Length: 326
Image (cartoon, rainbow, N blue to C red):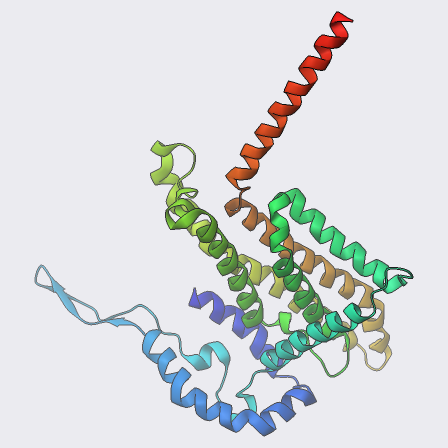
């Protein structure tokens, strides 16, 4: 787990630190960096060193000595970079907080401009997106999936805003950092597992990993369990890889032959917008698929449906009999 995060962090976040941090990040660290640095060195840094530097002491088997064996040797500096007051609050943390604030502000502004009588083009476009997400939930999960609509749409708005932030001056896309995308993937993972346990109970939630045939369950269960634990990392790596690659392509094109290639990012902007929307769509689509595996229609709805169907048949048969006799 940690070797994956360490490798991705070195390739992504450390590469970004070679560049000039946005002025917003510098201001945040200027006013709050010292306090954050003291907190990290007092609490988070010792905890990381204690739990993620694991060594098995020397032991003896059949008069032969083994060890010590080092199982984990990840330092906070290797994963997150050097600890200094100037970088105590990482750029992706600042940008993600700004993305959260922007998401709330955008939703609040759009909510205040809604009109039933004269909807504008912006409202109509927004309604198309909202209805598309609702239709996806109904098609993938079923009618009961609409109760997850607020969470799924929150994911969509937050990820889309985060993806598009890199197109504006003074901002960077927080989803171009693996820490943010892993956090989003883990949030989706925790949410759909919580829904599964809430609706089916812990035993019922684990039972669906066993498979429909009991005698091959011992083979299916570990495979399904590993597959489920890989999901948050696949969500995070996919989102991070595409957004980080998009930003690097734009940056590389703009520095090929300055100042003549300054127009390159402008030409690539439609592609960046397309990537931002596609990655948002893929993330919420996979999250809905995971929800569909653990969420099922209540038994009452099935029983009610059978009763309605039976009553409908009971009404049709006498009518057919009357027509036949007439």
